[in-house]
Image 1 (cartoon, helix red, strand yellow):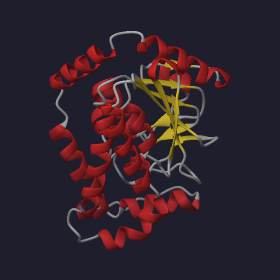
Image 2 (tube, one colour; image 1 turned 120 degrees about the vertical axis):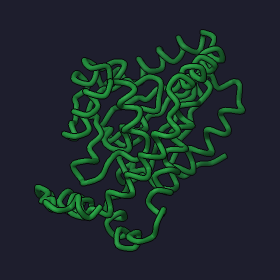
Image 3 (tube, one colour; image 1 turned 60 degrees about the vertical axis):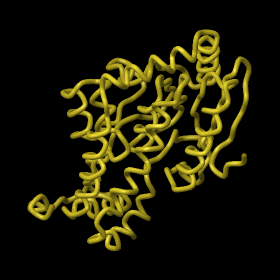
Image 4 (cartoon, rainbow, N blue to C red; image 1 turned 90 degrees about the horizontal axis):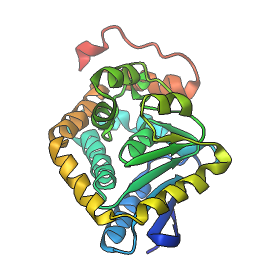
Length: 268
């Protein structure tokens, strides 16, 4: 199959290197979500694919979040259309959940910023190697909440207290800060990212990767996400009823501090 936003490279020992290439900013678009969904179906059926690596073709960004300009343009259209935004969030959740439940190991090779949706995609991976940029769930700074699994996976990974701090303050962590709290597996030098990730992937590929898939399935059974993801998608949509996203996104695009309405919560 061919993909408009993905570059696929087959390496030794069943390692599959996937570069996300969605210019200009590597934003999460419908095309990217569709391509990732289709690729996962192919690789799930391909037993020669033993380890999956998600990387980026963008020089400064792992994966950006949603297209904010498009979100601003469509906000008035979405208002009053119950379920439109929730459905979009649920679709991203479903595909990212497929990454999390992929029956073999998945590694994120992060060489640039992984903020918002990019962080959520990285959180869906089993391992995260990072060589530069910043990582974090920054949606609250825009008047939004993480809507592609971030509230759930950040909490499961780091615990409620630390996840609350990172999400509420929309913190952007360096690779050293992220490694110190366990958000990423390892911080590496930029020139060594590909080499170290591939070596790690090859080491995994020599082990019982199908048993790892069953272990992932068993671990998932201990912390079911279904209800949490549903609430997250519903609340992502509800943020648009507060008026805060329109101000937050406009401020971000205009490169100025946001001035959130004091009575915004009353409008939810």
